[in-house]
Length: 130
Image (tube, rainbow, N blue to C red):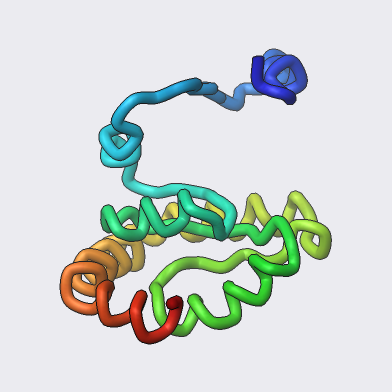
């Protein structure tokens, strides 16, 4: 059982929020490709969805991710919301709603990500990351 599954189900039962919990997905990239937008931390999932061209908003979960965001937000197109300990739920919600409603920006980000990863990814990884 997922650590917070009962808490998430309780929140869902008290609101009109639809939450799905998926476990042990095989071929997770197929699941990612069913989505037009993702909210994630700046870990592996962020890079996986970016490589698939899926626009995202990212919330840093630790200081390593905060530091990474300062670099990646200038290289990879995504919406950096902030460090979770320093932003309010209201700010996060407003930011995500605004982003999701900006279809033109999401389409621009999608095209940029596909082009970036197809053209620059190998050079970027070798020169900047490794």
